[in-house]
Image 1 (tube, one colour):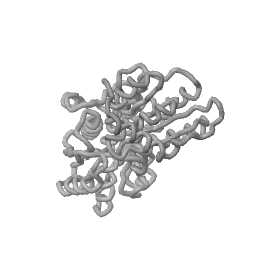
Image 2 (image 1 turned 90 degrees about the vertical axis):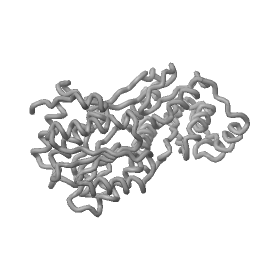
Image 3 (image 1 turned 90 degrees about the horizontal axis):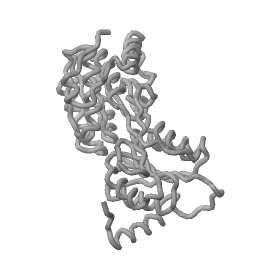
Length: 341
């Protein structure tokens, strides 16, 4: 792939570098490791995916004493520009936060073979790119099992961002977990078509509740904040958060959050960078590696009983042992068989 954007790109790079926080020349101690990050369009403050990645970067800054810079993408057109800015500034590692950047990462990595990149949630087949992916289906299975044990209407729902294979992992795992508890539970699924449309997230969550669901699992980036806003006025209803610990955004109304440790992925790669060791080619994090899991039910212990927690612990152990193989697609879900507890 060849990158050609002409004079307009060159001018954009100059302007962006002049304005971007942390992009100006700074006096750093010799040998300082520099790690940059390019956010997805949801940006910092999404209380979800990007914020989790940023937490990992902040930990790398404090624990590993590296220098860090974050460039935020306002649109997809910014991905390649932002990565090029960091590559030109000779950053030691450049993180691309989100699968939507895969094509841009490949093109920039080809143009800068002397730089190293990491992408979250995608695999880019270039020698200077690390892929960091997660077994979202495993954590979602536990979320579905909890929903299955908690629902009063026997109707729950999944609200996704964009209907793509990555999000279907969440959907398939969630549905399988609920059906592990009770195969008769109805699981609806709707997609917003975006990861940053808060208004549509609220509207579609309302539709799902109106159709009988009393628990909605929102895996929709910033769009999930709309579902959280919707549940606040719904008596007897809950939402399940995603990526970061969102439980405190609506205490008592968020049953749990399926935490996806993007921060752990960022930090683990940063450790290799700071130690001047080879980066992993593909880092995959599931329940066994502590890459996904549920929160501690700080605000919902009145509903999440010790008995339910015991079931979740047993299911987790069965998944880690390989006794339960969680489906990661709709096709695998269709052939999923329950394991007697």
